Amino acid sequence: MPAIVGDLWDFPTEIVTPEIALRVPEVNRALQAHQALVAPLKFVVYRDGVEAEDQPLWISNSASGISPFIRWNGVVRDLFLHGSAVLGCELDAFGLPRDMIHIPREHWEINRETGQVEADPAVIPARYRQRLIYVPLGSNGLLVDGIDSIRQARKLEHSRQARIDAPPAATELHLTDTLHDEMTREEKEALADNYSASRKKHAVSVTPSYIEVKEHNGQAVDLFEAGMNSLRLQLAMHTGVPASFLEAGKEGGSAGQMTYTNENNKASELWVFGSARFAYAITAALSMDSVVGPNAEVRADLSDFMVPTPSELSPESPVTAPEQPSPVTSEVTE
Image (cartoon, rainbow, N blue to C red; front, side, top):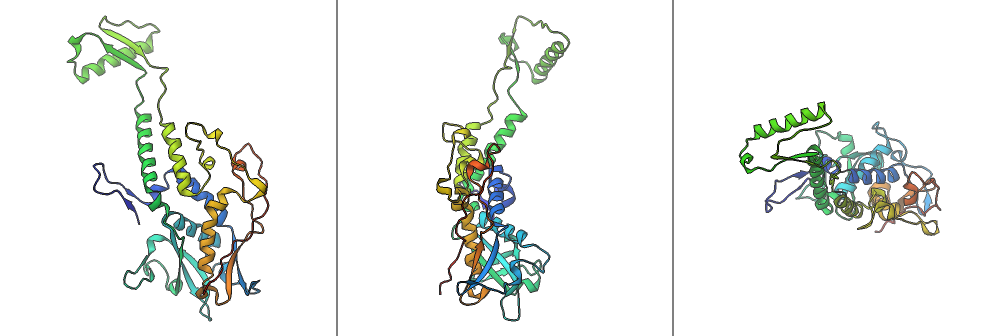
């Protein structure tokens, strides 16, 4: 649901929708990073601890015409923003999913009376409403926990744009005689236009005794870089990515001073503390008996998985593959 500023504050109310939140570059970059790591993963069904010989159709194909990659991209997006996602399933003769699609957040809701997930019949075909799989992240999404930082980012960007559109004047004509304090706006603009036109024609300017010319060409335009850096640190914490990935530096420092190491070739912070939780949420939901049957679970196959270290995210550093982490598993509990 959109996050709305409360009516208690005395500033204009702004609705923060997913589209608005993703206009914040740091938020968009973090989401793309998580999607890039999770969406290509292959999910495999295991029965009694052994990889099943007959894998469901939804594992590698989609009769809907939508690829699994796009399906998981959508699921990660909803988990990232809302903290939950929904899959719509077409069932086989045994009552288990044979095909599934991602149902965008705006097309489903939870019935308050029954507690069941309901999909919009006007948008979602009936065959993909045969079973709805609710995928909870286990925590709030960014539109809840990170909403204050998103609003700050939006306000800061508006301030930056206003400063860019109206930078400080390079030349100031300071009127030293109080007799001219009552000049109208039109008269002041005419005086400025005449001076500007004269400077374009001549390298030397002549001004009356009541005008003092002040040049501000060397004045730096404040684009709120310090505030942007502090905000990037907050967004990095909320979105589960290393601060260096959002070009953020330590307080009082610069982005170049933020360094990370990948000790003992372990999986990077980006995966361990960020993207992995989305993969765990997906495998947990897919491991339910209503999806794969009893004595079965779904694991994410990480055999071809390469996790970049934060230092490798820099264009100056070559990309190398660290030691492969253990497969993501979700145990089924009765």
